[in-house]
Picture 1: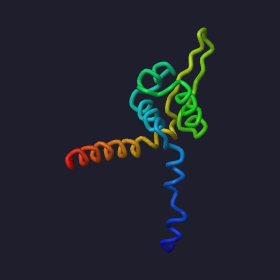
Picture 2: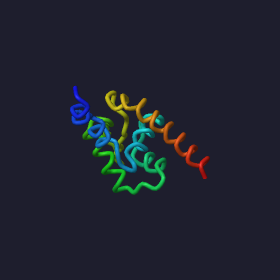
Picture 3: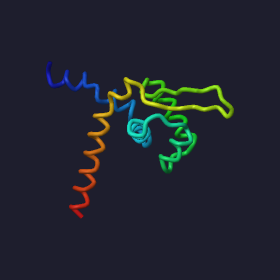
Picture 4: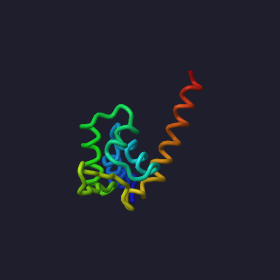
Length: 112
């Protein structure tokens, strides 16, 4: 495979298209480390996210098969979000990115 072919067939952009955005990594890491949560619990844990944004990001992550939305027929309705088995495969990647982000911020602050 030539260098050009390698770039053309790189799937990093495909992966990033699924998890990029201001809130998706935070939602995923919250569900990975906190476990299954109701919508309201997620909303309280992710400071600054609007209800509309949380709903849309959850829907997109569900459509990609990373999270599971379980609705229970109760009054009031109970909806619980959790990671799928497939979604958990992203844990080491997001954890590494999180650690890299911490190191980067620390590096930048040492420069100042």
